[in-house]
Image (tube, rainbow, N blue to C red; front, side, top):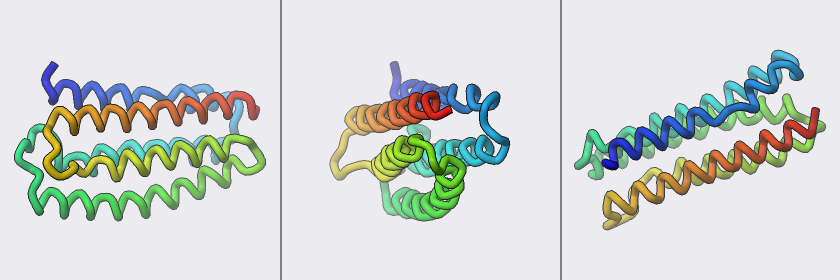
Length: 152
């Protein structure tokens, strides 16, 4: 499997893990569901957008321009995600889901900061690290789904 295919598969798998949002439709008020959807969507979009300077299509993109683009993207993403997280937390107040959502946010932050290649890191090691970080996020969201299922 080429690294391009592995990267595409990783992003596709990450984007497809969202059954809690589908399950929540029947039992949550519209504002709470909207807040969760916006928060999760914003985290996913941020990872894709901020990872693009280092995409396999731009194989040599590990220079100063790519790092500058990435760091600018990260600062914008953090601001957007922070606002969406606050709204999502407010929509869940009084439930045990808040702790699980904050754990997901920690995994998101680690994945976001982990996009930047390490010095002298080979492409295979970089891809392995990305897969690990995205799996950690998927598991954190799964824990949120479990907490949510017990809360309602």
